[in-house]
Every structure is written in C-alpha cells, then in structure tokens.
Image (cartoon, rainbow, N blue to C red; front, side, top):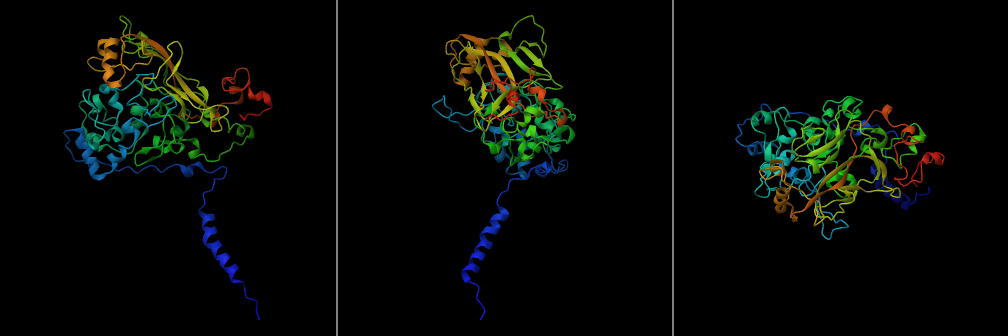
Length: 481
C-alpha cells in the first residue's frame, strides 16, 4: 500500500504559492547599484500642431482659455490646485507664530523686489492668470482667468504685460496656434528673469540655458533636457518646491538627482565615503552664473538719488545700488530640504544684526542633511523704526515709489495690502536670503577635486559646518558621524 502524502503539506504549499510568490514578485525592490538612469527619464510628450485646430478670433484672452478647455476640460481645474496659480504654500505651523501661516509670492517678501502685495501692475507679468487689479482682490476661483499661453505659447509670439494680461499688440490667434509642450524657453520667461532681470535671482537659472553648451549644463547641453525632464509633471503638478516659498517640503514633491541616478556609486571608494555627508550638487556644480552675471548684493537705501547715471549692473534710480558676479562660487551649509526659519510679514527684527529672509535647516547631527551649495543674496531693505519689522512698499503704479520716489507714500499705500501699520519712521536693515543651487550641473571631468575642499586653500569653512577642522586630517574619514 502506497504511503499517502499528508494533505496538510499540500495545503501549506498551496498557501505559499498563493501568498508568498506574488509578494516576492511585486514587493518593491531597491534598484541595484549602477541602475541605468535612462530608465527613469520620462518620455518627451508628442507635439500636436494646433495651427488647424485653433480657429479664433479672440476678443479677450479669456476666450483663448475657453477654447483650450473645450479639448482640455480639466486643465484649468488642475492648474488652480498648483502653487503656480495660488502663489502660496499650504498652511504651516511655525514655532514663532501662534497661528498657521502660508508662505509664497502672494503674501510674503524676499530681498529682491521685496513683495507683490499692491504691486499687481508689474509683478503679475509672471503669474499664470489674467485680470489682476489694484482696486479689488483677485478672483482665484475663475477658471477663465487661467493663462494657458503663459506656459505653452511660443515666446516669440506671446508675452505678458501689466496686471497679468497679454502685452499690447499680441496676436492671440497666432499665439494660441503656436502652443506646444513646455520648453526651457517658456519656463525661463519667468524663472530666468525673476527678481528684476536675467539671472538676477537664482544664479543657476538664466537665459544662457536656452541654448546651453555641455560645459554649461551637461543635462540640458549634451542631452537637451527640458525642465520637465527632471521636474516631473502630472496633471499640471510640477515636481520641485523652492524653499524660498515654503517652510517644510514633502520629499515626494521635491526633485533630486536620485530620481534617475538610483544607487549609483563612484568607482573611487574615497568618493563614496562622502555620500552620507555631501550632496551631489556640491561637487558637480562647482560654480554658477558661468556666462551671465547674477546679483549678490542690493542696497535699496540708495534708490531715488538724483544725478546718478543708470546702469543695470551698478545702479538704477528706481531700485538702488547692486553688485553682480560671474563664475560665482557657492556658499555651503548643511541642508535637509526644509527651512529652519522663513521671515513672515510682521516678524520682529533686530536692525543692528542680520535678518534672515530664509535659513536652510540641517546640521552636522542631522542624518537627513548634506553639505549643500547655495547662492547667498545680501540686501539692505526698508524696515519700520518704531515697530521693528520689515516693510513691503508699493513700487509700481501711480503712487508707487518708482513713480514718485517717496518712501513715505509708498509705505503708507502698502498698509491696506500688507495689513502692517507704518509709523512714519523708516530705516534700512541688512537681510540674507539663500537660494539652493541645483542647475548648471557640470560634466564629471569638471567636478570638484580633493584639493578644492581640503587643504589650506579649500573652499569649505569646516568649523562653520560643525567640524573641529578639515576632516581630511583624520585619516580620510569624511562621515559626519
């Protein structure tokens, strides 16, 4: 008589086949070292020529949007859920405020052109909405105010003018027929020229990136990456959040080198010892503003002076004095992707010290932080001598400083927009603002070498970073812990 196989063993095998095998197949796996980064580069969208689709004529820009929505019915709804539309972050609870606050261009300040509240005439030339006004609050709920052309029209045929509306004499039909996927040029219209001109604000974003060489940016120059190649976009939600307009950033919303370069190691093990402490950008972006200069200092206290010659790179009567630099060597700080502090309108300042508009979070003891490169912009900007907070003036418009060159009127006019009282006494205080450096990635052959950071002529301030001295003197141990 044959021995029968126990039924319980057959049942156990069945359970294993049903449960364990699918889990083993579909369980997320870490990519192996050396994973091909091209596997993660998104396919470029296929362009659909709109010349025979768009009819027109269009009496108003809102009619263009209505025509776009006939084929793209959810586009406006998607856009209106983005910070490109709201110009504000989600509400944050910050340690120095009792109530949650939002941060963004719509309601806060920087140390360039200072603030948008009340300056709708000029500032909104970079907002993706039509129909701003100086007389009433903006209607963020109207989908027809979404400016599709701002991001999708050929920049040679479309430009924004005052109050977010198309510039005068724009042919709306020609612009609408030119639409296509976004490019470095369309994104760059605002991001290259932020802060008052080409290269002014970021230093690693300027018009040289429209047609860059490989040595200017290896991704854009050699491989013709567009902005959305790295800033992955779904339903108009563009991945990547700038710390200037946020406080805490969800890592899932941020762009990183590891999106494509997953688990990559260097062939030289000495370089791999740096990975826990040093960001990719630190070595691979040794300098920015390689072709076009970037602004590093802005002194508003000298604005309005009579008899001085205007020079875009030295002095403008409407804005004051400047210092620009090319081939800018970044500043280095520990950075975990968030902010330790972001100045909120109304925060008290010490006018005799430095006021940080933003301060990157991270330290040598933070396991999520890496040594990261930044552009530091220093400014002297106005503050109220009685209330001891920074002031956001009205610059554009009939009563703006650029028209009357009267600070008192500019600050008084701003009260209804900012909600901050003006005492009648103002001065100028020093402010610092940090801008993360993530573009102008150099070819590997141009990356920093050992002597660039270590040794008597190294660029790192090791003690400011929390080290007792140059880690190279510790026998080659570069880990921060």
